[in-house]
Image: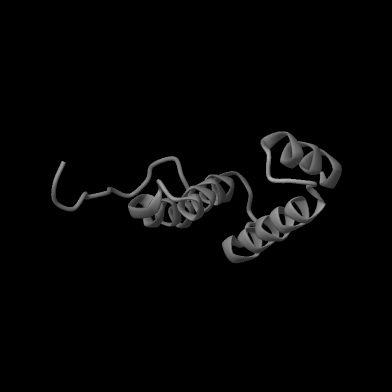
Length: 85
């Protein structure tokens, strides 16, 4: 597919959540884009989501997990995630 895509106004989604999701489309394949798209989905369901705060909280949790992990192997990260959460 070439050219720019046209998006119509959402019918069942909050407009700000929809727009935030659409804004992530060019970078959806990157971790940051995927995280922000997930935040956009949460914005649809929850009234009090502030994307910048939510992303900051996720980054802080990620840092805590990485600091608690005894290595970078998936099993080490999983154990640290369990410990932090």
